[in-house]
Image: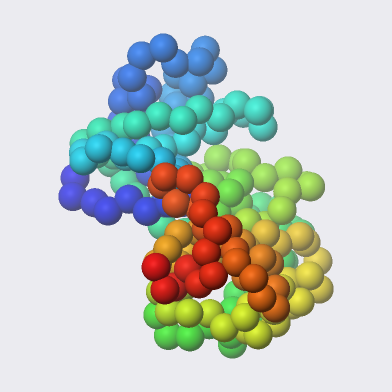
Length: 203
C-alpha cells in the first residue's frame, strides 16, 4: 500500500511473519490476538517501517522493521481524538483536553491520544490500566510559542488524570513541559537519536 508512516501512527499488520525471524516467544501470540504495531523512531531503509509491538505485560515490547506491503491499515493519533477510552478517569481527562486544545491550537496543528489510550482506541484491545497516564501528541508544523505551551502545561496539570504531552515539530519530537520552560535548549527525538537544539522549528 502507498503510505507515509509517521511516529505514533498505529498500523494493522498481516501477521507475525511480517516481523521476521527470532521473535520473542510472546510476539506471535500477541500479534494473533491483536495484529497491530505503532510506528517508532528508528533509521530504516525504503520500503520498511520501524514498529513497536506491545504484549499483554508492560515489559513486553518488541522493535521490528516490517515491509510496507505487510501494513493493511494506518490510523494516525488525530483520527482518535473524538473517541473515548473505557476507563472513566481517562475518558474525562481526554474530554477536558479536547476542550482546552480547541481554544489553544492554531490552524494547522492537530492532536490525538497515543500510548496505551491511543492503542486501545485504534484497536479495541484494552491497554490502559487505572494508573495509566493520558499520552498525547500535538503535531505543530508551525512554532508553538512558549507562553502558550506554558498555559497548556498548567491546564493539563489541573485535569483529573495525568497528561504526558509530546510536540511533533519539523525537527522531531519534543516534550511539551520541556519546551514550556522560559529558555534554554530542548531535547529533540529523531530517527537517529536525541539532540539538544534551541528551536526545533528552525531545523
